[in-house]
Image (cartoon, rainbow, N blue to C red; front, side, top):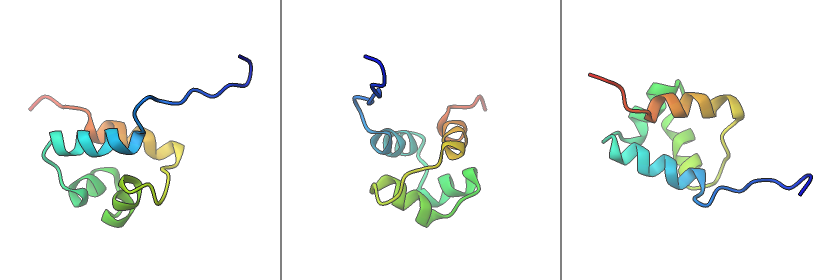
Length: 68
């Protein structure tokens, strides 16, 4: 399968929204954590824009649980 791309079984935008809600964060709080705008998060979650690769690490850090 040379050249085949791997597609996740659940779209990243669905996982992002679920993780954000599980952490009881609103879109503005997530935007603040990643250094972006609420509008950017809204666009990602509604699939109107895709996140850049460098944003994915910031997103992962923002929704990853942290010890209190």
